[in-house]
Image (tube, rainbow, N blue to C red):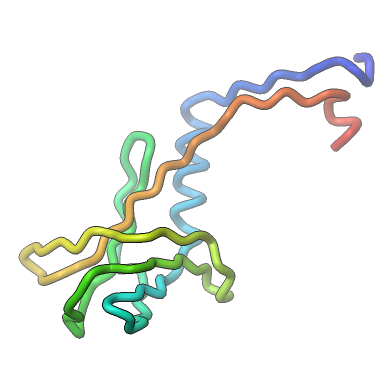
Length: 117
């Protein structure tokens, strides 16, 4: 293969689904700002569906106000991402905050193949 040849990689659905599960497993907790106060919530559960996954955080102290910011962290305290807003949901177990995340794989062309690594 010529070093300048372009390689096109199109992942199959299994690879994409495996990536979603991997991304979903990395997050550990969220710092959520509600009405100016910051709260730390561990991930209570995660739902993985077609094209997205959703993390749920159980709300124990019932803060009142709008969700102003949500930052998602890994187990080492590394910031994974942030968003403005979120959804507060109520079910039989009480209140929870949910954040829906999409994993999007975009086609990329690489010149030189694996030689450029």
